[in-house]
Image (cartoon, rainbow over all chains, first blue to last red; front, side, top):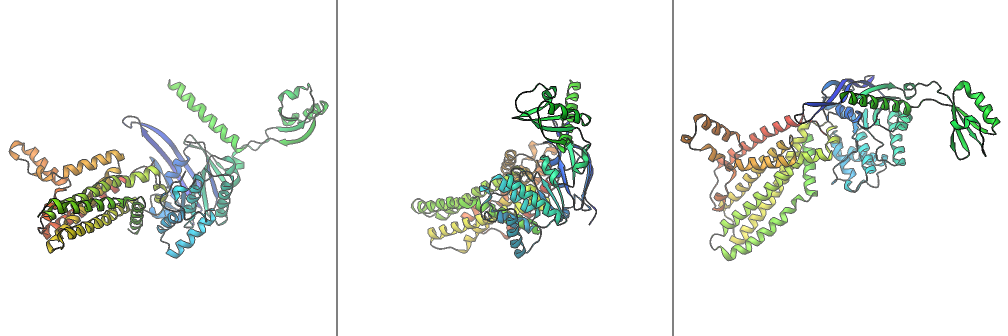
Length: 317
Length: 258
C-alpha cells in the first residue's frame, strides 16, 4: 500500500453564476494536501469553507475546474478506486422505502459479496452502529441521528482501506458522537486511513493525528493539532476566591463567577500579582499556564478571512 | 452491467412499494364496467369496443407512469441526494442510468402484462371464446410497451440536463410531435422550398416515430399484424433507445451534483 493514501494537487472548483453564468465563484482554490496511510486526518473549517466541496470532488460527485487527486495511487476518475473507499455524505439520505438492513444489503451488492457474506456483514454493521433492533424498520421512520448511523454503516460495510466521512458527528446526540468517535478510533486501530470533515474542533483535537484547516476555499495550515498553534505560554491564569469587597486594582482586570475570580497576567508579573491578591485577602485556588488552542488558531483565521473579505468589498465600492 | 441489474431491481422494488401498481385496480374496475355496459349497448361490435377501450386504457396509464416516473427517476435521486452514497460505490454513472431505465421498463412490463391479461379475460367474458386472431391484441400491447420504453428513455435524457417540469414538457411535446411524423414526412413539396422540404424530411426521420406503434384498429378488428412490422418496431425501439440512453449517459457523466 502506498504511504500516501490521499494525494490532492492544485484542486480548484469554481461555480459559474449570474444571468449567463459569466461570473464565477471560487469554492476551492488550488488545494494541495496529502493524507498519509493509516492516519486520522481532520479537515476543519467553518461552514462554506470548502470542506464538503473537496470531499465531493474526491468522490467525483462534482468535477474540478483544475487540479487532480489520487486515492491509494489511483486517479479519482477510476470507478474501481471506490472498491477500497467508504464514504459518508453530509446529512445522508437513503431510500426511505427500504429498511436499514435492505439498504445495507443493496449497497453490499455493488461490492460483489455473496448472499451469506452480505447477511453476516449487514447484521454486524447494524450492531456496530447501534441499530440492531431497528434494522427492519423502513428508513422513513428514522430520525436524523439514526440515518447518520446507517450512513456510517454503509461507509464501512465493505471493509474499505480509506474512509472519508463528511461531518460524521452532525445530528448525533452525545452518546451517538461518542460511538462515532469509538468507531473512528477502531478504524485507526485496524490500520485504516480516515479523513473526516468537521467544524467541531474538540472532535478534531481528540481524534486526529493531523488536521488541515480550510477557510474561504484555501488551506491555511496542516499539521498535528498541537503543532498548528503557537505552543508558547501566552500568560498565566490565577484562579482565586475572595469573600467580601476589596479595592485592590488587580481585581478590576479579573473575571468574577460567584466568589471565584479568574485573572490573566503576564508570566513575569505572576509573583507580584499573587502577593497583591494575598494582601487583599484572596485565597489562591490554582495557577495555570495559558496556551493557544486550536479553536483560537481557527478563529484567528476566520476573523482574518472575514476582515479581508470586508476590505475587498469596501475597495470594490 | 451487473450493477445496472442491481439498480434495476431496486427501482422495481421502489415502484411496488410506492404503490405505482395500484393503477391496476383502476384498470380492473374500468374493464369490469366496460364488460357489463358493452353487453347491453353494443350488439355485434363488442370486440371492437372492448379492445379499443382496453388498449387505450393500457396506453394512457402507461404513458402517465412512463412520463412522470421516468422524469423523476434521476431528478428525485439528485434532489434527495440518495445518489451520493450510491455513486461512491464502484458503480459507473452509465450503469446507474441503465439500471434506472431497465427498472422502470420492468415495472411497465409487469403492469402492462397484468392489464393485458385483464383485457383478455374481459374479451373471453364478452365473446365466450378466444380465437387465433385475438393474438393481435397481444401484439398491440407489445407495441405499447415498446412505445413506453422509448418514452422512458426520452424522459430520462431530458431529466439529466433540465428541471423535472421542463423535462415533462419536453417529453410530452416530443411524444405529440412523434404522433405526426408521417404527416411531416408527407408534407406537399410544391408548397415548400427544396431546402425546407429536405429539412422536414430529415427532421421526420430524426424525431421518434410513435405512429408506427399504433395498431389498435387492426387489433380491434382482429386483423393480423405483419411480422415485418413487429421486427421493424422492435429494432427501431432498441436502436432509438440505445442512442437516447447513450446521449443521457454522456450528459449525466459530466453533471455536477448539488
